[in-house]
Length: 128
Image (cartoon, rainbow, N blue to C red; front, side, top):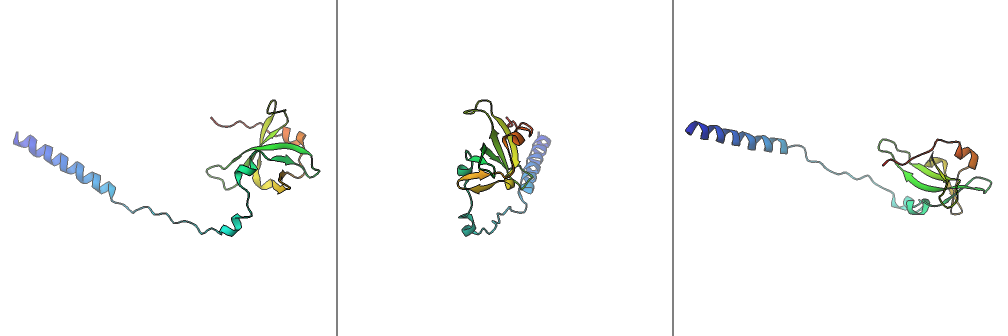
């Protein structure tokens, strides 16, 4: 009986010491980057970009921004555009790098693009 009590006590002490050894490590700290808040005032809120019409340099409406996507390992955001269709029926989703878009008169400008050139891009489907 005494041997089993000693063995149980030894096992309990070893378990407790192991847990505390793993708990001790370098504490994680958060070091925020300095952000120039003044430069943010010239930026565009995503809530204003999503749903905005997309036009080409001739002023023709060629689609609308359906969503914005930032991938985990990329620094470039992408714009999902809805092209063609009527009231969301029969439209096609395509993706372009957000850097190809610019803002002009409250619309997203995609220079040189046409409805046909966007429809020629691969279909995009959102992940589940």
